[in-house]
Structures are given as C-alpha cells and as structure tokens.
Image (cartoon, rainbow, N blue to C red):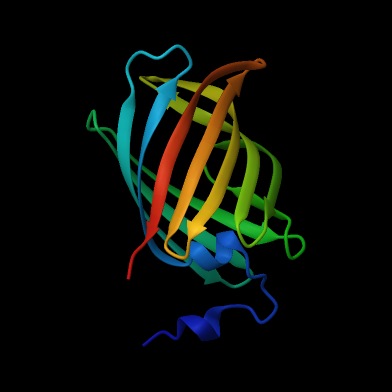
Length: 158
C-alpha cells in the first residue's frame, strides 16, 4: 500500500492549501453574474496529494445545467507562503499566497462560456472557517470590468 506521508517532501510548507486540501474535499457553490440574472450552482469533488515537490489537486465540477468540468492543478512553492499554480485552462499566473487561515490567488483563466473560450481574471480568496470548513469568494474581471463572482463552501471529507 502507498504510504502517502512518505511521499510528501520533507520540507514542504504547512498552510491552508497543503493542509486543508490534502485528501478528499467536497464543495458546493454558485456563480453570480454582475447584474444578477441566471445563477448557476455546482457541486465539486476534489482530491489533493503531493507528487514529488508539487502539490496536485484534481477537481470535478458538476453544474446544475448538466455541464461537467474536470481540472488538474499543480502548485509549486517558491517559499513557505508563496506559490505558483498551473492547469490546462490557465493563461497567466499572477500570484499565490497562503497562510494557515487564508489562501489568495490571482490568475488569468480561459473560461468556457457556451461554445466560446473567454480569458477572465480571477481574484480568488479562501478563508478557513473551522478545521473542516473553508469559504471561497472569487471575483471575475475582464478588461477591468467586474463580471461576477463565484462563491463556494468547502468541507473536508473523512
């Protein structure tokens, strides 16, 4: 049997990203457009693990309209609190910071809207509520104009 603790690098940082999101996590949320209108809800299954010096997180989004998105993020730490991230839909990474109770990321993401792909800036913040709960608010911008936000609640699963 694979020993997950042995696979974790010896000098990896402990913070909200690596501590809370290691293992299985579930989330539920909604996408709220800037001017209201149709709100999309979703559920999310995630799993995070260490692979060499990278923290890898797989995501499976299931939206209320039937759309399913799968994504794999890879995070690499530059220091105990600063990191970079990458996934297939990422156009540009700006910043990533983590502490015990806060995770902040800014990135340009190729967002699928219908049949189109639109590059959208995300200002993504996650806040620890307690040992098993994290709240998320991600504000979306394009050309400096706020498009809407994504709100979610993450729960650690046993």
